[in-house]
Length: 575
Image (tube, rainbow, N blue to C red; front, top):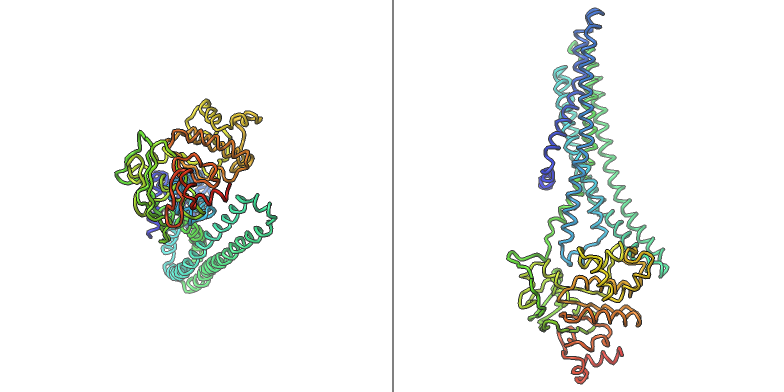
């Protein structure tokens, strides 16, 4: 019931369409109910009179029926068109809400969840929700009107036969409720398994170059076959339940015809029912059973829709770990002094310390480089500044302001990040550079490209800045992608810069050009650099050697070399 209450809220913006849809559904049902009664009345009255009277009455009867069925046709059009559009609008609203919520969720959520599962919730789950949103209330309402209406007429024709049928319906309801519980479990399992299929597909396609370079197509084929077959097995359980459900209900519907014929025959033989009434009874039994069949199908649709909606709600009720504080204020007029004050950190699902009591300060416009072994916490230190994660002890400040007291949008708009793994969006080079400032003019984009030493290369391409980069920038080299990413940050023009091993994956020539671009980018900006190649950070104002127990050494290049400690050891290893 709680799930249904949450679901009903999404009808709010479309309540006018919703109620008109139900009114039209009612009229459709009433016309279907009216025909057998009109036929029964005419059979008992008009059709017993002479031919002239019958012929005289037929035109107005025909006109009445024409008006009824024309109205029914218009109502059916409205239900089919506007009703479906209502469901589609609700689907769009939910999909937009889910996407917006995905964007708010913290890095920790993405660390723990698969993007294929998330896509499944965004696409296939919401389609079934849309179908249920439209057909659910409408079919339920039509069915109830027809069942109640036809049952009333069945009682009016012969209450003895109607009571026996009512007992059969109660048995049918009891059977359906029991089967429903099992069906709900199997539909939820279907959701998880198709999510696994999407996850396997997304993982393989995203890494297709690695797959083919290792000639591991058979490995990936086996992985996909495993998840695909698991989905088939869940479908098998699901369809077995559906078969039991629909087969059982079909049997009960057959019993209704059997009881009508046998018990009706007994009532006729006993003088308690007219033969003509039994024929009319058969008509109403058809009207009575038709909505029952619709309800059986609706049950399947409801289980699909609600199982998808439960998965939707589970994401929507996942609170982002990183949020603006109630009194958060925007970060303005940034000078760029950054301070880590006794900072400690561990992940929310693991109490193992990643950072313990880390303290250092970067004056505005100065540069600090972080070096150390993998896993020592260098990237984590950088991630705490834009609040990709929140500290669990101490604080991080910009210009003396705790980053947790600032609005996320204003904080992150003042920080530029260039990472080792560059992500380019599917689109043109121009669109990817403009990502740093969506409203930028073409002159600003070109200027940023020149500063990043990528303009001449772009101009040499047949389509220039409108060249399509391919998925994740697949049509460009690593160095070219890196320079486009640098141009993106040039365009953003932030006062604080984070360089996360931005040249470690490049060849020497590319590194040379990229380092020139990075040096130009870092000029007069507060810069934190994570370095793999120590030769690139010799000019840093301060170098911090990060070890498992915190900052082991600090100083400039010359000072650390004179200490002949950890830094000097790393430098001699890499030089």
